[in-house]
Structures are given as structure tokens and as C-alpha cells.
Image (cartoon, rainbow, N blue to C red; front, side, top):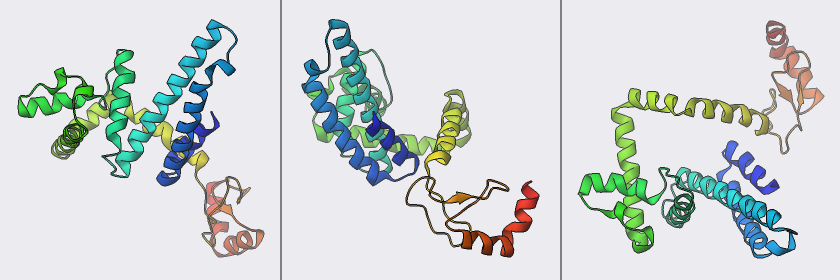
Length: 224
């Protein structure tokens, strides 16, 4: 979906508020599509594929919203997201750190309670938030006390490759600034690259000429 791609672009650019707005629109669009499923399918096979598509899109949306809310420190907003993700993942036999059982396990280890054995539907929003915040604090504490251990864990889980891929993707979607006057693009590809090195961009021929005489002439030759 176009909206899903746009949300990914805003997330890669760290334009978090814009990403939230796109996610809100995407959520309403999915609600409409699910409610009018019969308008888009002709056979039972098509119906099954359409349901899978909508479910996959909804899951991606929820995961993105969860991440964005954490980056914006909007932890309360993640309570309904945790509920929805838990339902989705339990139906498919998955288990990730933002599902209720994974969060409750950390809480139960510290308090000797058995919240993980109860359905999230039986837990109040206040308690879900409390358990979630506790898990966040424990994660921060462990990361600060055992940074080397987490480096190993991140490497083993493939996070390095994921981060590298995200950085490469970010280079393709971030708005660039003129090397001379620092004016930022308002749209992708608005500024023109230096044809000599393809390393810097300019908002105008005037800026390119001034920067060439002032600094870039030597830099460009070194790059070559």
C-alpha cells in the first residue's frame, strides 16, 4: 500500500509526527477495506488472500505504531497496541517482546505473581501500562550494566543487518541539504548532485559555482 510505504519513509527520516498522521489514515483505510471486503473479491480463494493481506497490513501498522510511540515516549498510547498485537500474535502462535505474555514474564520474575498466566483481556489498562513500563526499565538497566552482552545479542538476532539495511534505505528517502547554503530539499531529488563525485548536492547552479571555487574543487578531485 502507498500509505504503508509513506509511513516507512517518514519513520526512516525520523519524521515521527508525520508518520503518526499517516498511520492514522492507514488505519481508517484498513477499517474501510475490511468492512467492504465483499466489494473486492470474487471467489473464496480471493477472499482468503484478501483477509491475509489486510491482517498482514494491520500487523505491520501496529508494529510501526508501537515503535513510534516508544520513540515519542507515548507509552500510554501503546496499551491498546499491546492488546491488539497480543491477539494477533496469539492467533498465529507467535511471541514477541511487545505481547502480553513476554512483558508479564519480566514482571512475574520480579514480583512472583502470575500475570503471564492470565489473558490480557482480564487485565486493566492501568496494570498493562505498569507491567509495560517495568519491562522498559528492566531493559534499560540491563543494557546500561551489560552493554557488551547486548552487542552480542543484537548481532546474533540479526539487528546489525537490519540497522544497516535501514540506514541504506534512509539514504534513499532522506531530504538532502545544499552543500553551500545548507538549504534543505522540500521534495526528494529536488537538489542536483555534483556530476564529478556524486557525493554532494546543490540547490542552484550559483551555489554550486560558489562552493566549487571556495572548497569543493579540491574535495571533488580527491574523491575521484
